[in-house]
Image (cartoon, rainbow, N blue to C red; front, side):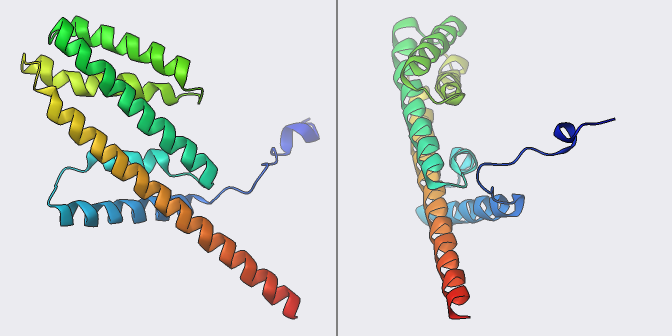
Length: 182
């Protein structure tokens, strides 16, 4: 026989948005990105879309934390990738060393659980073109494009979260006003 503790679902501290709210926020963010990038004449928006998905959060404070850690870890990854590529050359061992250094730096600097993974992923993404083309300079464009796209995607996610919070606040005020007028 199951006890009450086993059958009662845990209570959430705050109501979470439904999956449809996440879908709407992410679709709105991706649509806005497409408009921005299309207007800009830039067809590559992969990292911007990924950033919208990663930074989208129900609460503005959580979105700000996701934004900050995404940007900082992307910059750490780029900052580690270039010296590794330049001083050690374009090879697999330089990628491994760059990944190791970025994990250490990010895990020490950023105390948001799990966010440290962005830095070594960035190192791998930025350094791989240089290794594949056996060129120290081949990774520069990748680093710039990724960083710009991450920043734009993260800003769009923050904007969508901010607008959602405003709509939620206005809806709450309208509902309270309606209750008081009855």
